[in-house]
Image (cartoon, rainbow, N blue to C red; front, side, top):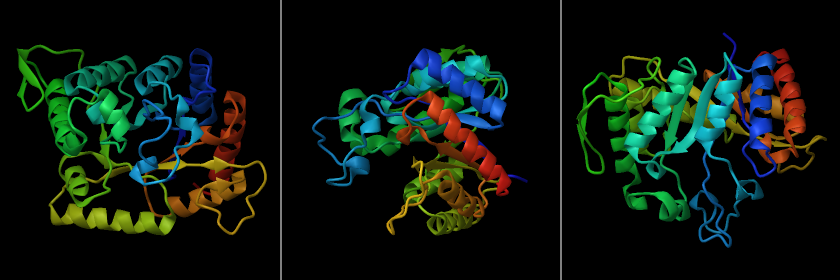
Length: 309
């Protein structure tokens, strides 16, 4: 079975939302991509008070200076397509009140005919937490746990009732319901996160950082699933953040997924051999506009399929 391929939708500062998002979503569907995806960044601290991913001194990329709201972006894509799955990779769950998030995701799934995939995470930016979170950064794991509880309650049968640390739902009818059970994907970047994923989620959403590291992570996650008695397979979607260059990157320090279409596809092939079900290819960080995004995406798709992905 061929690896499914997804495409990151345009959300960067160069994007004309009302024009480019539907256009790229339709292009992805017509080209053969299986899914389209969004991510979440709510602000760009300037000057930065914290390095990228919390790593001291690591600069934030300029592409994060103005990122469109993920659910608005995905709604535009849903209205312009009929087949592709609609994914979040990822929503930072603690930046959203759980009840409101559950209702928004349910409405989007219902409106799209059951095409939503909910990738959730806890985030890393203390600046974003200061601006939008309703609980301290240190409690982000507990907030994600409660969010999973609330999603299950709100998406389940009426009457819905729930009482947690931040959310109280008196017995009530809450709708619309999702068109079908929405797959929930989580990271596994700590022992606690891995246990949460195995015990509570449908699947895993790692970021590509090299095929060898991915294979090791995947093997450990499957071992943990066996240890904890998980009786269903772990769905998997790999986020491949690319740095496209028109000419091949010739430096010895070439990072995975950096370079020409041929170099990017070579790395995609290596990652696909690990055995995950789907790869999300995000090209928007290194293109100038939607037309270039479509041109490069078409090349990557054709080359990846020709290479056996």
